[in-house]
Image (tube, rainbow, N blue to C red; front, side):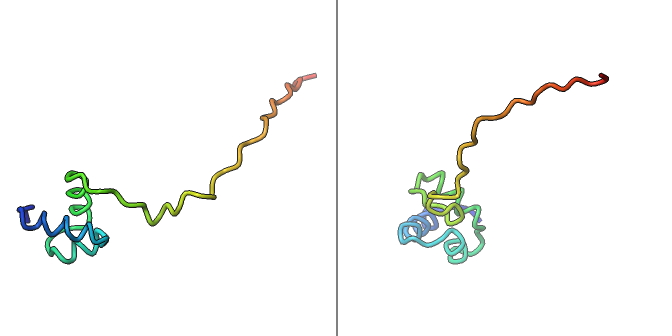
Length: 77
């Protein structure tokens, strides 16, 4: 499978419609999801928010308090 002009046009069109990389790969047949993602990246197509990352609000760690330095202990006495 090679990326000819017709396939690139279809990719651009489906990408702009908001289809996922998996859906685009299924429509192009003979193309993997990763091939679609790579080609979209090389073409400079607009990125999309990751469905895995979510909105980015919440889930972050709270800042730690001041760390306590261990008190040295005398050993052998």
